[in-house]
Length: 354
Picture: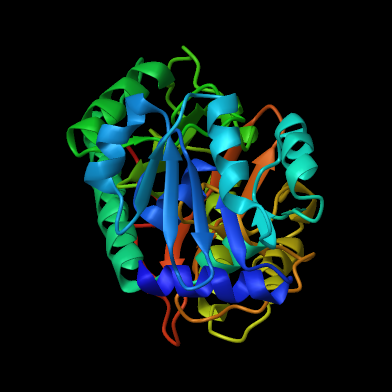
């Protein structure tokens, strides 16, 4: 925690600030060890304060590390306590709420709203974070083994999701709360697989289906993300061909991952191969993204990215091909950037037929 706070202040100083204020639970957890309803403040020198409503104070005391604690009423009480603490300081905050920022600017006209400080610090994972990510990935591998054993013709996508989430919760692994979906998982059979972010439905698996299973779950705060595509019975020649193209594309992307390589080069390695096989127009998303306390964080593995990979970044590599109204294939791993990348998922990427 001491090194995290040191890094946070280093990035804050680069934009002319000596105090960081966080409202976001991910950043609060990163800075203090506590995930909940509160405001965190980090001052020059490392002093860290949590301002929390009384209903959260018990957990704050148990879970936070080396923090002063201030109890305040929810809402305006928290903001009032904060403004009393940050007057005459050069403050940067991750607050994106217009009304709160308007209120804070009355006390500190120079306050800056920026998430860069937090994301730039979080982009390199420490050994504790890597250990948690590896454990999360191991649980996801176990869930793919359950897919292999439990998936069957006539089963619905939602029934399989229930089986998988029951196991995940037994392992203390939970939904990420990702705002862009109504479901904890993506389980997409047949034509539903042609939608990269398909919602789970009551469609039953049929013979000849390809089934895309994207497991993105949180363990001890950290998110691991992987995708495998299964076949149910005999699939078409095109489906098998597309699977093999995506498998080879992902292999080329993983091979390109090294420190100091441009993120866009990873995207290029995957995309170029798929384009050469005449399926380029069906690869409709970026090749990957950073993972950590959020599902999608820095760096972005895309042709638009101007970031270079650095050792101990945590990223995904996930090419896919989506044939509208027919089927889709995606293969994804989470990995740690090293000279020889640490691919955290061990479950096979060879096509499994149920």
